[in-house]
Amino acid sequence: MFIGEYLHNLDAKRRLAIPAKFRKDVGKKAVITRGLDNCLFVYPLDEWEKVASRLADLPTGQKDTRDFVRLFLAGAAEVELDQLGRILIPDFLSEYAGLKGEASVIGVFKRMEIWNKERWESYKKEVERSTDTLAEKLGEIGAY
Image 1 (cartoon, helix red, strand yellow):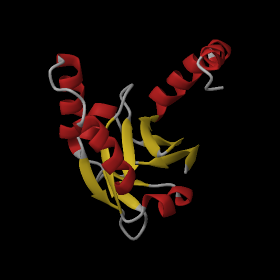
Image 2 (cartoon, one colour):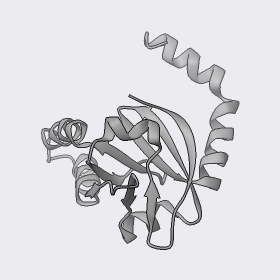
Image 3 (cartoon, one colour):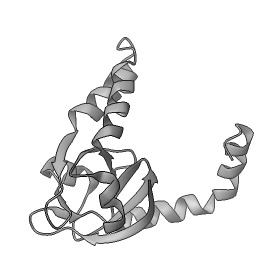
């Protein structure tokens, strides 16, 4: 389970250390892809298989579904953790997320997200302002 928020540096070779608390759950390999809100999603291989399988089962007749699945799966790359627990982020994904210098690595239960530090701080502040409203909406559907 991935929970928490960590700040790590992206080195000159685009390597990013996975937080030590996450490494056991990630394993030796993971899949990284374009996430939502201009962040990156990182899945352990077993979780990726579940997500990719559900996406592959969606109907291809709807353009918006087809577009999302295509972009999400085509943008995926398998990464290996090196001996220091770092992953190499492909150029196109680093560019997509605007990663440079410090990056925020957050745990979102079954996946990690990698954010441009400033973008994460801005996003977090925006969402924090509407927490009560979000909690009410979740309560309406029985999720909170």
